[in-house]
Length: 104
Image 1 (cartoon, helix red, strand yellow):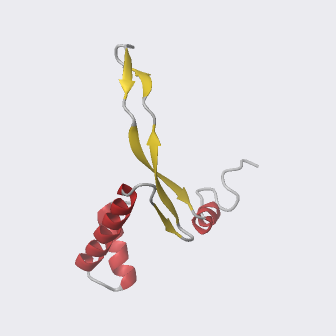
Image 2 (tube, helix red, strand yellow):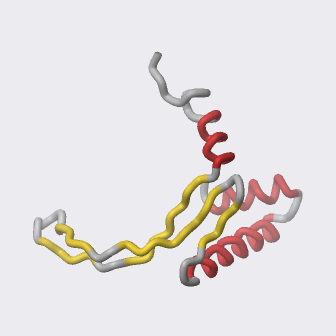
């Protein structure tokens, strides 16, 4: 789903204009971004999941074209851990129905 598709779905579900839905989504993304920029901050949406910031250490890697060793700088990354309700809903509505992808 693209951002435009999400805005359209939000507008339809909430009975608001696409412009209002776009402003709401932009505000949400801005709020999450600002919270994660703060030191040791995370954003928890009960039932949906938690966005958190982690520090990835510097490490050594390889250039895939030349095989030459390279240094990869340390970086902040965003992690998302799904909440219980989201996780359960994905298990129930997976591509292979209840129970996931078993071939029994």
